[in-house]
Amino acid sequence: MPAHVIDRDEAILRIAVDYIEMPDLIVTARQATRLWNLPTEVCERALTSLVERGFLIQTRAGAFLRRTSGAPLPLAKAS
Image 1 (tube, one colour):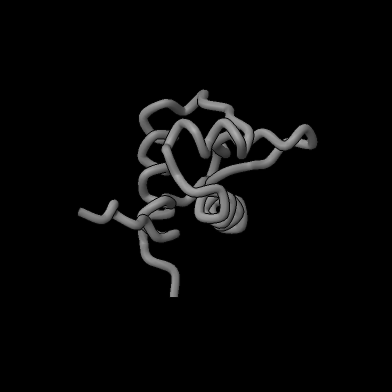
Image 2 (tube, rainbow, N blue to C red):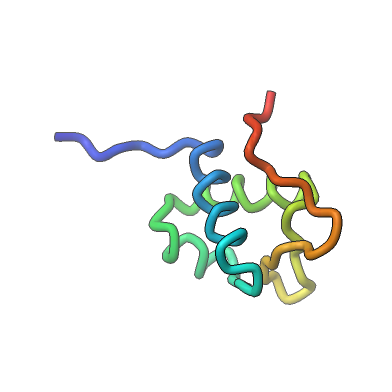
C-alpha cells in the first residue's frame, strides 16, 4: 500500500495547529522536517508560506516561531 503523500496545504495546516497548541515552539527547518515527518521540500514550502502569510517569523539564525500579535490564522487554502 503506497504511503500517503502530503501536499503543502496539508503541511501548512499540520504545522499551524501545532504552533497554535504550542505558541512558544521554535524550530529550524531541519527540526520541522523531522518533527512533522514531512519531505524536506514540502516542509520548507509550508514554512515559507506561513512566513509570507504573517503567521510565523523566521529569525536570522533560521529558526521559525509564531508571530504573537496580529497573526492571522493560516487555515484557508491558498489560491
